[in-house]
Length: 286
Image (tube, rainbow, N blue to C red; front, side, top):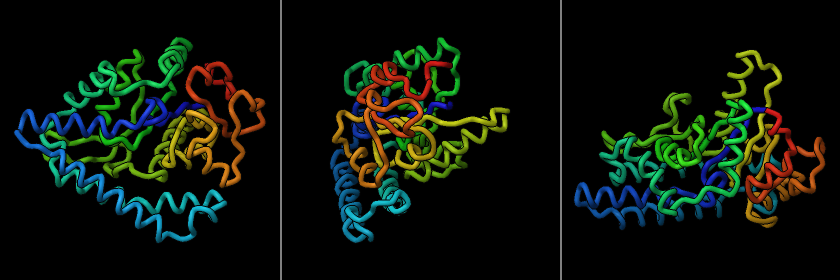
């Protein structure tokens, strides 16, 4: 089983885009004398406005979307909103002049300074996997900077394969997609599941015909990946938003401790200590 993990809110306790943006605002103020805090606030306001309008107008509305294909269609319809927001980020110059090295350092310092917190048990989870010889662990994220993600992950002591977007900072601060997607920016659940399918196809070409995936995620952009193979929803409790969505879609999802092996494809856990304790999908077998 290929282990694939979302980053924001799954490996980390909270979304890190705000931390990444705060670093960029501080950088622009220090190195270019520009205060982009109001520009960032405007970006957030415009995004919320676009999203709210789209959600209000979209049909069918959330309460009557009870089939996975209906929810997937809705999630895929958000692409233009995400791209419009990224265009605003680029136009603001938020990341202009920032190198990938500086972004990686920012990720590392964010963990060291407590701005970003790694979810409980994750470091032990990947270290045990490394000791057992596992190399089939990937991080797939719609985060804007692969380098920032790598900086955060460098603190766990195990090098992981990361597939995320990247800031082309030294030029104009554009946000580009991962190389394996030929520049297409990764912003929706469809984008993420395409990457997961590519990873599985690569394994099968390399001779692992029975390759499967266990996916870990916490939010709507993870829905398609969770349904692609085996899945673990990482949530602080049973009332998490994604868990509610899955139940609305009539996808059975219980806590790992309440899920007998072989009787479910999706379960949930609060952290990676729980994943290690109830190894539902045989991840500890190497």
